[in-house]
Length: 572
Image (cartoon, rainbow, N blue to C red; front, side, top):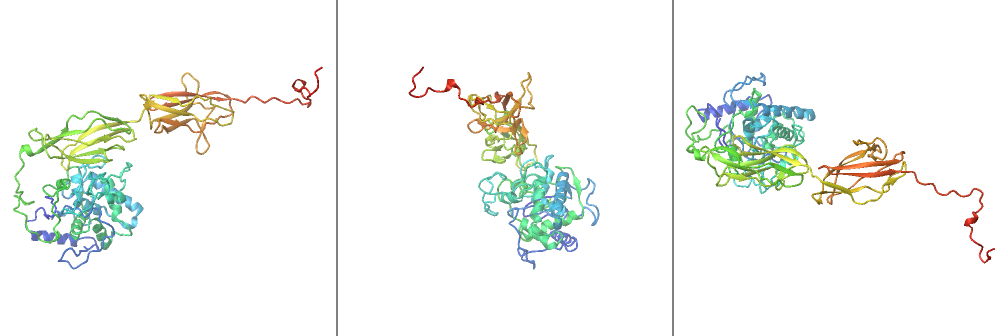
């Protein structure tokens, strides 16, 4: 089905009159009490639009205005879990459908009174992103490249200045709607959810986005089984009666039944004004104010067999056709925590003839469990290739979290295989560690050591800050192990601890250990400190009994040898 902004087409509809009748049928066939509330932005309606409860989640960004097919996927009242058959138009990709149903269950567990139906999420997901571009998501439900709406710079769309420093939409000047449910960054900052339990709130992940949309639609005391509340919820998502009618049409359609199709096989809205233009930042036509149920002039002669209008633009030549985005010689991506990666990611766009292709939009995305980001703290950045077909990503900076992650480079909003790079962040290291003084460390049995152990770590002679250090009371064996007696540390509950982890050197490379306590056993013991990187120092701790003081003569008679001569008395 040809999906275009501001264009309302139905597969098999040969006249606008047929389309109008079909819309009326869809709108009138909802559940009891679920009648369509129309609004004042349509001059031919007599109702009034309920005021939205919240700011529009999408910033009133453009949306896909296609309507459901004329044929229903199933009879009313039958199962919505149909087999994997039928057209891609009526089917929902597996991961996308699973995310909607999971969001419905999650919301029901915390806000049962809202009565959120997953079919409403499916309807919104359809008009906002074509079900995440036909289900083009990875195993975790994250889109292969960010789905970005047009730049909201006031030219054809709303004016929304940047609210996230480009962290979500890659634009530090204006905002853009992001992800399969098309949240603007400021709304995502409030409503973002972790729907798949990976510890992140990613608007480009369908599980996160679907749950966020569910909670947003259920805001306040809404009961979505009531038509008025459902309409208010949809209008709060995008304050347009035409939008409401379009979502309602798909909502009713999905309630009649749908089926699961494999990820990546859903119908992708093609052509001008589709998702490809969402990421280009160029204004696309706004939805027609006449609404999807009103006849609209045909945009041009139909293609053979019906469907969309004939494209007056000639097919691009092989030299103009993007065939692939590929690695342009990027080396190993490795860095120490807190440092910048020395290697810059570079890709090349090539055409069908194998030559370079300029002005191709490429999105670089940092993915995985990492706090690494591009310069400026951005997780996704969109750039265009130059005359030689190449484009280089901004400097990638490692965070403090060690481990592996990936960076993807994709042709923005194109169904092409992404280029994936493996990156590694190594924990900060030290190759030397030593005490900052040489004081003897002693304590009496059962007492605490008066002096504190302080060490300093270095790497290649320079201060090593933020280096992980482990402190362990060890035995004096040939292969030392944790000692079960002798000096110890104590936790917050006063319990004995003989190994401390999670210690880190400060900005000056030094580390001061907590207080050390002696138990009742005298002797000489060892404390070993080991850094990330293998540097080690062993500190000696002595627990010893103090020497007793001199005992006075019990007779009370002074020691003659210690008695001074009486003053003025001559010696014998």
